[in-house]
Length: 442
Image (cartoon, rainbow, N blue to C red; front, side, top):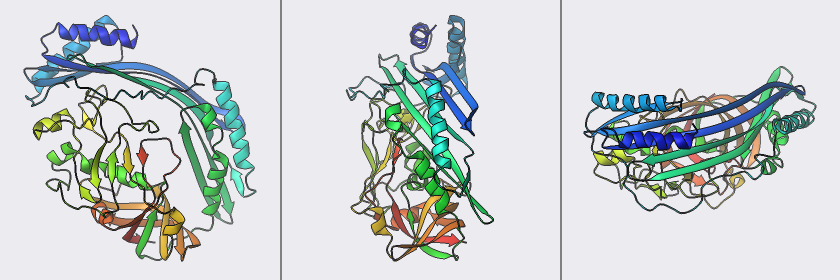
C-alpha cells in the first residue's frame, strides 16, 4: 500500500471509530549519496522510507501513534494505539484545525533534472571536486572527504474537518573539506551547500571556498582576553539566533522557559533588528501554505524595530492563551506538535559587511559547539574562530577563543546589520551582525 492509500484508509478507520476528531501526518522520502576519497568511492547510501502518524481526540483528550508499516492490519493497530493513548492524557482546550483559506502559491520545490542525474553522475562530480580542492594550493595535503547527493521528500496532511495538504521538496547537495599545513599547525576548512537542481549546484565554488577557509586559518592564535566588538558573519549569525529561537515560542513561555514571557510590546533589542517568521518566500526551504496541523501560514514579525511584537503559536499553545494559532506548528509522525519558525529571517541593513570592520573588531566565521548555550537563561559560552581587524585591516587569524554573553544583552547591543545574506539554500536568513560588549577569553 502506498502512502496516499494508507492515509485514506487510516482516515476512513478513524472516521468510523470513537474518535471525535483526528489528523494525520505522513511522509514519503528517497535519498542517495556518494562519498569519495583519493578518487575512489568510500561510501554510498541509498534510503527510501514512508511512515505516518495519527492524532485523535476522544472526550477532548489527545492521543498519538505512528507506524512505518503501511498494511491494513498495521493501520488498525496504529489507530487503536492512538485511542488507547487518550486514556493517559488530560483534557485540552483545542482540537484539530478548522478549514480556512490558505495561500494558493505552489510551494513544491521540484528539480527539473532530479530523475536524469544518476548516482554515477554524483560520483563523477565528487571526484572532480576532490581533484579541484587538492589542486588549489600546494599547502593542501589532504582532502579527507568529498561527496554529493540528492533527496526527495513529500509530506502529507489530512484531518477530520476535510483539510488536505501535501508538499514535495527535492534538492541536490555537495560538500568538500581540505586540510592544510604550515609548520606544526594543521587546519581544516569545510564547505557544503545545496540547490533545488543539479545544474544550479555545479557552478558553486566548493573547492575554492573550502581551500580559502583552510588557508586563511593557518597561523591562527588566540587574542588577548577582554571585551570586544564582534562581527558575527552571516555564516554564523543564523546559528546564534537559531540556538535561542524558542524564546519566541508561546509554548516555551507557558512552560516558564522563555525570558520573554510577559514582555510583549517591550523593546527587547536594538531598533535595527526585525525578525520575521517568513512563510511564503518561494526561495526559502521552510515556506509552505499550511503548517503541520493544517493551519494556514502567514508572515509574522516577532521583533519589529527592536520591539517584541508576537509569540509564535500552534493550536495547543493558542488554546491555552485564548489566541488563534499563527500557523507555526511543527510535528514529526510520533510526537505532539511543537513550534517553529517557517523561515527565520532578519531584515538586512544598508551596508556591506566590510564597511562594518572599522575600529577594532573581531570577525567570527566559525562556531565550535553549543553545549554552553541555554535558550532558557539566554547565556552563551561558545568556542569560535575568526579574524581580528583594526581599522578595516585584517591583523591575524584567531582560534582557541571562547565568547561569553547573554543573548538578550546581545540583541540590545547590536550596532549594525549588513545588507548581505550567505549563499546557503535553507530556512534561516540572517545578515552579518555587529554586536558590542562581547567577553572573549583567549
